[in-house]
Length: 461
Image (tube, rainbow, N blue to C red; front, side):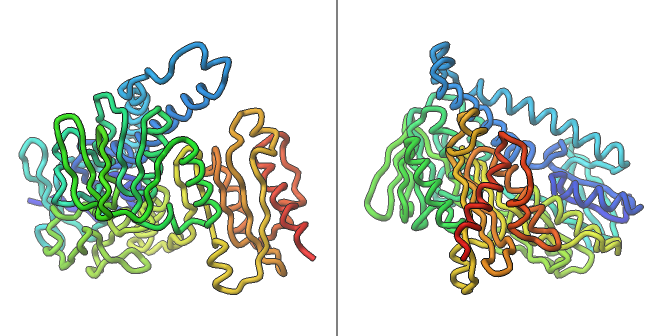
């Protein structure tokens, strides 16, 4: 006999949590199913949280290395990856415990096991103990996330071939690493591993890194990675990967061959839908396992919604949580959560990148009369004090109305800094004048907004 719920959420990551919390707050009886055996999803266990915790540790080591006084006290290049990852594991434990309490406090029933649809309003859950539980529902939210895409001609079972989930289990010494795929994840790991002292070849299938970014920011990232020692190979595609007991050789279609101790594959992601039996609810995923939705995150089945990485871009934990809340609002009829549109880009390279709004190319193509305000971190007192002098803040604004059209930041804490601009852009009367006429604490990184605003206004005539 099936246990009945008003709504069932498949997946306990950010998207699933956002949906479940909104649904239960609106008075619905809610169940959440996750096959990992813990809440948090891939975000907490193998994605965002562990990789960013690793990044922070490597960033701390790099700052230590830059300081001539501190760097004489120890050889930080001798720190094994296992020790670097130890802090990440502690953060994961804390995050899982915290989010588990959220579900517990709000009386959300948790089921752990593999879920699949049996009938239009029935889900079956196979638990780790081999027990099958059946759950009836009025509405379902699919929030199963994604996993690294693995081409079938590459042996990901080989100990020297990694994807972005498996790399966090690297347990042997590596001198040189190939990273195939120079998207967000590839660039993040390139900056992390070169920061640990590895030799890194970053193979990019595109003409430039992260081409959707503002050109100046993308160029700054390329320049800085090269300055750190990353060898970037643009417009290259793999032909095959050759593996031996102690090395890998990447054969490229251009005829080049690259040899390294290991390869990290970062070329795309696929939605986790293959075990859901979507056909039972009249749905079908695309070739990458992603589900199509409308503006309300409703699938072709009006009782089934999908949110997070499983629906494709932007594939950000921040957006996924809000997508879950928006879907839940449409289920309950509360309609107080807007569709997720303007999401700041957060790229956790070393240093970070974060952007919101239009790029210079987009504005130029649209023939919008804009102006540019810049602030370079090397000129800010706070950056000089901290030693984080690499980076810049760039504000794009309409030269007639002074409306802020885009915020682009490259540098330490860029993902934090961008939210100041985001808050002003979302206010009525959005204007560059706000930054020019606002007193900022000194010394701070936030002061970059005043510097950039005055710099841009000086170009007006």
